[in-house]
View 1 (cartoon, helix red, strand yellow):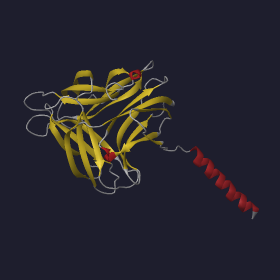
View 2 (tube, one colour; view 1 turned 90 degrees about the vertical axis):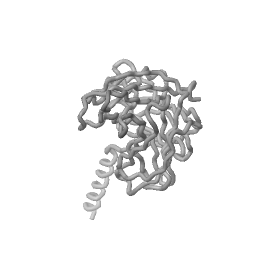
View 3 (cartoon, one colour; view 1 turned 60 degrees about the horizontal axis):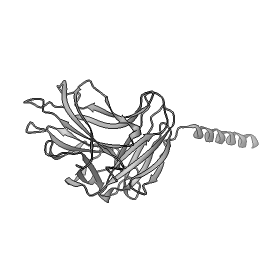
View 4 (cartoon, helix red, strand yellow; view 1 turned 45 degrees about the vertical axis):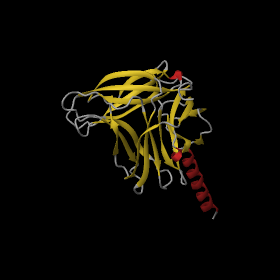
Length: 302
């Protein structure tokens, strides 16, 4: 009897020890208290940190800045995204931050700016299907000046942890041989069913323009990087992509994504604009883009 007892006890101890050393996809959740709202965090590699910014139906939009406070190893970078997430009872706008492996833990200052009362350029309610890359026309790409900000408000409950794969505004040329600004939205493929969502796009013409770039994006430019400025400036950014007409027949290309993230080059942290071309299977070689970068800081986003 004692022998059997000790065998069971030993097995239980081994299981506990194994569970204690397995990597845990932990999520740290806190809520915004003020605007601008800033706080210090030590990011551990490979862990998504989650910060609730407020209810998704508030009509507000958020811009985040992540400022690394200590040096790191060459190539270190920090990813972040703001999107709605269901917590089991309500949808919240959520900032998610990741320091990828294998880089060492990193101290950062996170600042979140909340904007309200912006000009509405699009207000649409539609049904989103799980994992489908759905698109909505905002207007002709040449009609407005300034950056767009998307506000996504799910109108019904879902499963806990439900969220979106991508929310993205970029120029496309689906008809009339001209470019249009398109809101693209994709829910997670794992969602159990369709989701009714209200989608609004705001224009923020008063944000200052800090970088005006003209680039030639080639099909083999899989992850082009352009330095916008040192991360020490403590600025959040919004990017407006304008595709320049290449001729009588517009190329079947678009931007797959563009983001700004802090990156360490071996000496200092810089905010870097990363660009990825889309439609890799289409027949095109290069396309011209004007990328306008707007800043949000304590002066422009009080």
